[in-house]
Length: 367
Image (tube, rainbow, N blue to C red):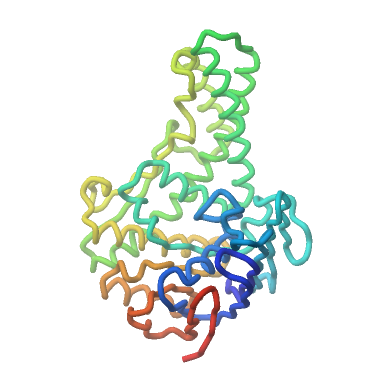
């Protein structure tokens, strides 16, 4: 998969732009706060369905403007495609190949990209919510139905928690309604669990192999899903296990006023050479782990869909030592990569196109 162009109007600090990309390594180059990350944000929005930097679309509107419009053209094994997203007031318009989409969930899965940016370093040292967030985005790109099922799970969880909160305070609650929401939770929890586990099991071997290459065979990275139920590839069996857990612990949950079990408590256990990475990994090892995970994301997509996604590296190569930078650049020759780099840093050897960024303007040149 390759992105051919990105267009934006009144998006962040961009008045209007059209950026064309080569099929190899593309370098967005310039001083800080000029618009490099804004372009990455706009591109990645089409993979994720929403911005990774804000939950409020209005924050992406250029100051003084009424709204923004962004779009991409891309090509994949299925042919050439286009996606557009516009925000004006309360209106949100999503188009795929010129046809209206009803929701962000319908956009996810069309254009596949992998983003590596500074906050990803929290995958190792951060809390479980960081790793669950990573899983949700990664799984949704591979299994587009996942996002809708996960949203249904969240709705069931919120309604069940509302009733449990009333019960904990001694207020009236409808027990039949509580049981009904418990059944809904189990139904959608089963799908979420199975797809998360399936994804982690595909991802882990790639992470291990890439981690071994990065460390010259000295460090083995392993991933596993930590969940309330035993591993099972069967959604029906998983649903039954969740139903049993919710039933067995219902009285305890009524006392505390919240759901104590379910995918909202999942975690991804990351180990390096058999030890918990969160406790034992050095800063250099943390960077290697995250780099291995992000590169492995691409390998999973290649395995499932027959082609690599677009790789987006936003302000992270400067965080890597020369060996890791060389590994990334030389190992990505057969893939499309868009990298941001600050003025004053070295121009990356092998970049096919350098795009100079200044004040929301983008000027391209081939090398």
